[in-house]
Length: 248
Image (cartoon, rainbow, N blue to C red; front, top):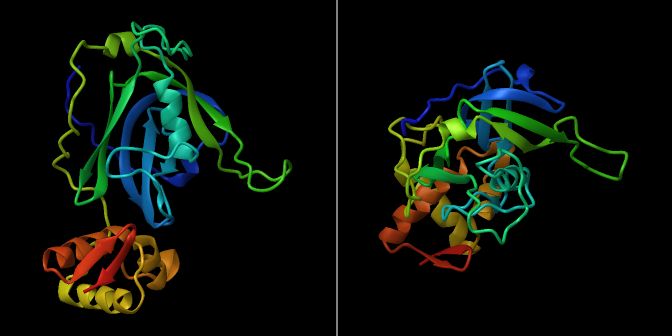
């Protein structure tokens, strides 16, 4: 199989499946979801169906060191991938057998934002048995119409499997930049606005974002804020204590 990145395409939300189904995976990639005002991992299938899982929920989700919080929907999905035995394509809970080859997954980042996703062996072109589990949002009688997704079985992994060493570093970011909101042109104005905010009250990135209006009204996305803070840290205007940033 080629190591070439597969460019994904966002399809209409009407193709979002609500029940378990089996389909051939066409593409898997991070993209910015305007409605959620955040990044998601989107899976597109040859049938035209697509589903996505938020990569960030406040301070939880996908982190830049590659770790993912397991209790979120994206964590449940990736955990189901890790359970798959490459030789059989089915879950194998024998964690004590070093001969079992399991699927490994990787994210690439660009300017602090998720920009690529791939698996070894590659699962693109494989048939995924997608399991939908109703997401509980209240008591036992209250569930969301948008389910959580896991993978119960994968067909075609042996054909995709190529013996290769596991990468020891993060994969290179793809050339194509992710579909992010354009950053404000006046970077000085962004820096000043954030600086004035944290000068009076040290805050984490999530707190700064919330002060600017959050999902509904914020003129920035979290990536804008992170880039601005990194720039000001280099200039010596900002220091970070734990999760909080404060003006010097």
